[in-house]
Image 1 (cartoon, helix red, strand yellow):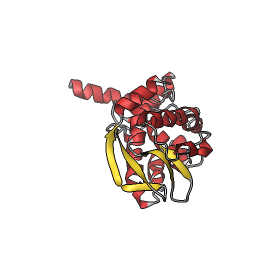
Image 2 (cartoon, rainbow, N blue to C red):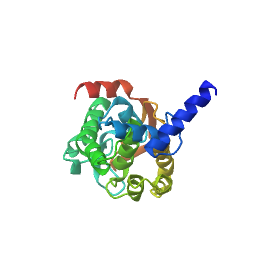
Image 3 (cartoon, rainbow, N blue to C red):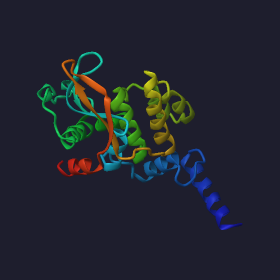
Image 4 (cartoon, rainbow, N blue to C red):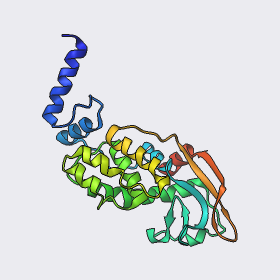
Length: 227
């Protein structure tokens, strides 16, 4: 038997022991199950890679604006309901680093812990945590989503299908597919860039024509260091 065949046979034996699909040594299901068995699951830390993945799906608006239903919003989709008052940023643009500092604070104190609570008792890989965090930051529904319940029940195929039920508006479908690919297949797509918008006045709505892609890696590293 070749070395390659030996490795394959060992991988399949380990996967049978773990009770997961045969998805290779680096497969997300295999890695998550192994981490769970060995008590080495991802801690829920907001790492640079996790933060950059999520920000690639979001936008940054450096001063306060009104969203589609008239709620004052700022930075990376932050509203005053978060506990951070955003009205102070009306006509008061902040640096990208400051926007990212508040974004990281929210991920660390609210969204990240809620994701970990939703998967309590189940080890996650960094990729799975990042995908679930992105989903929750966008929907706020990690605690009720049926795909999470299916995943926790071991119904992986059903969970994959149900993940894509969160597809409205149509513009969100590409993001949802990337989140699903990250959670179930470990495919990272973040490139360190975020879309930055200016604000139209006197309407105080995003100026869609001003969209520009900005590499925010340096600012994110500075924000992480400032924590």
